[in-house]
Image (tube, rainbow, N blue to C red; front, side):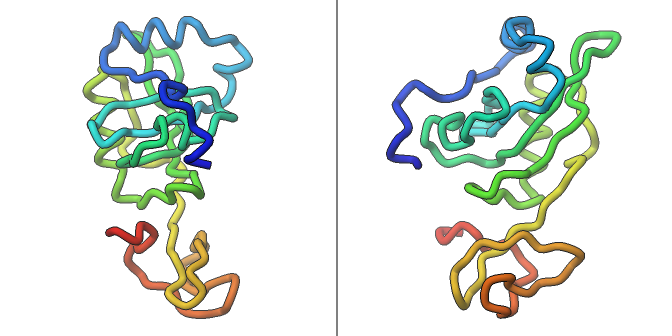
Length: 158
């Protein structure tokens, strides 16, 4: 999928409250009713795209610090993220990536929850190399039945 990403086709880089206001003002009521695709680039910046966008395209094919879905709600003094997940099975971001999300939202001046509101646990099976979503602390590969490590291991470079 990364090979199909055209340079410059990524999500909108948001680095200030004014940029966010401009971006959110251009969204339709239908778009605002559901979460958006987001990534946090290695530069720490928030990138946003419509929900059905691919995260790899949102990141312009680059590596990320975090990725998932994010929803926004208007609050008394502006906007806040009210839903944030690390739900993306391509990058499989670890739950510890929340700190990058929090910093990016804080940098833009958006309110936010204290952590992911829907958190997924991803692991790569050491046996068959398949990516898994761990449910109910059952660290067993759904593909081969092998044991999964308790620490995040999805990125082979990590």
